[in-house]
Image 1 (cartoon, helix red, strand yellow):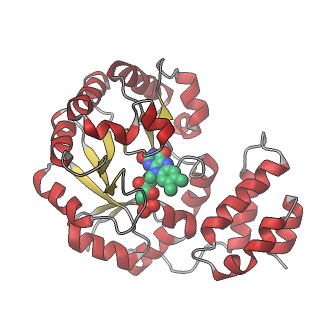
Image 2: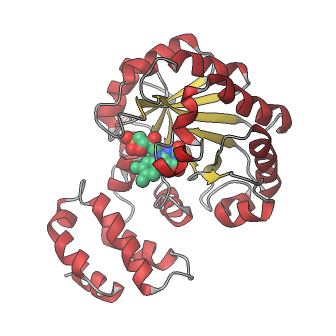
Image 3: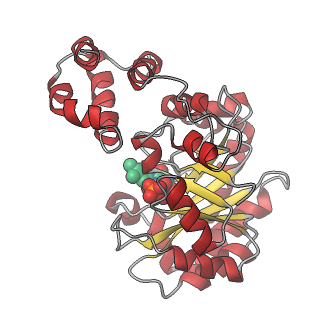
Length: 315
Ligand SMILES: Cc1cc2nc3c(=O)[nH]c(=O)nc-3n(C[C@H](O)[C@H](O)[C@H](O)COP(=O)(O)O)c2cc1C
């Protein structure tokens, strides 16, 4: 297996600027996709993008030079197109479109995975964005296999491709599946067979072994990893080391120090209580990979201040 590309999945509410910066410093990934920015009644102004995706002001990169793709979610072609162009004015270098979000709140407003029931609207959105974006700005889309079922999968893929998207990330589940395992990688293989777009395999990749298996089944060389990156921030580095791509298996930083850095880098507008909430939230993911966190979780969750949290963590 050669020349693989690894992406960090967008994850609203947790894979934000600070977390991206921490992971980027560890390395191993090629790029990030930022959590969705929702376009509802009005185009998103340039200024808002600079606040929502701060890497925009750094040529769309983390401080450690990993590209950050900016993701938009919405259903009105014109508003999406104007917003995408405003994002580019803010500094975005790659635009991604969210056609996969399963949440009620988002689907109720006609955005995310609910659009997978309307291939012609998918076409309209991608086409409006592609025809107004500068040629040098790549445009990708992220989909699930369908909404209730997979009946429209290939129509959806064809609509997105013929409207001019360069790349398609496929999370191998329908909206109805939620996050129920397993992701259906064999369906991703079928998409790869019929499409000329770069197909990015997503869903349930958690280490080098699952990535190898995903490659065997899908034939993809580009992969996106979400939850496993929260559970094990070293996963990209470990995959590279396992594939002998020149990275050491040795962790560049101890987990406790990583949590300390996270705390220090969390936005200064957060008070201690909000920072503590963020730390506990991340530990809820880390516990799945680190037995020591699992063992301490109850105690960590009972802490009332970040000072108590770090005293308990380092005890
Ligand atoms: C907490 C959470 C938030 C998410 N937010 C987004 C999002 O903003 N945009 C998006 O396209 N997908 C979002 N996703 C889906 C992930 O990007 C990814 O497709 C999914 O988790 C499957 O990949 P995994 O098995 O590697 O986690 C989110 C998933 C989770 C768990």
